[in-house]
Length: 216
Image 1 (cartoon, rainbow, N blue to C red):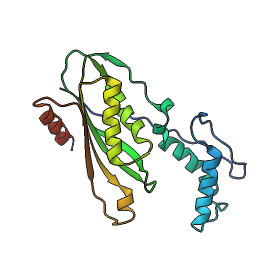
Image 2 (spheres, helix red, strand yellow):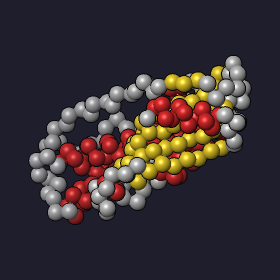
Image 3 (tube, rainbow, N blue to C red):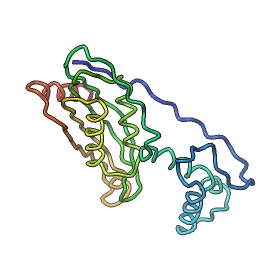
């Protein structure tokens, strides 16, 4: 069984500081990213709707740059151009590949608030494997969109099965939802969801569970 820890992280790029007195302008975003002007106007209207002054110090750059830039990044998973290249290699055997403790951050489509946690992935290759870091990148890409946890779990499992051509894929997500912790019942709990494509063989399910428990 192949086990690996998600040590490869991408450092967020630091946004360039802008002159607050300058006109709103789009950063160097790809043309298929988001509608920058609409995002600016929507954020400005929301600030005004909750009784804030969008032109006061501290908020001007919020609607001009920071929120549009954040949503461009946090919804990158909705754009096919942002998907990582899933190059495969010949597998030496059909031993189960397990990747646990993959951090993910996503946005609840009901309240536009984050939910975050860890993803655990196992797959049995059918002749080909993918680089271990690519599993992390794929989970991260799938997470960056408006969705719900159950759908995200299914999307990761089915997407990986298609990308890798695996015989079986099992995905488990454990997450905390800020729409529960910050509003509503205002209680922080953990929600676990599971999705499987194909069937794990005898013993593979136990090995997957053991790997998850060791990571906890």
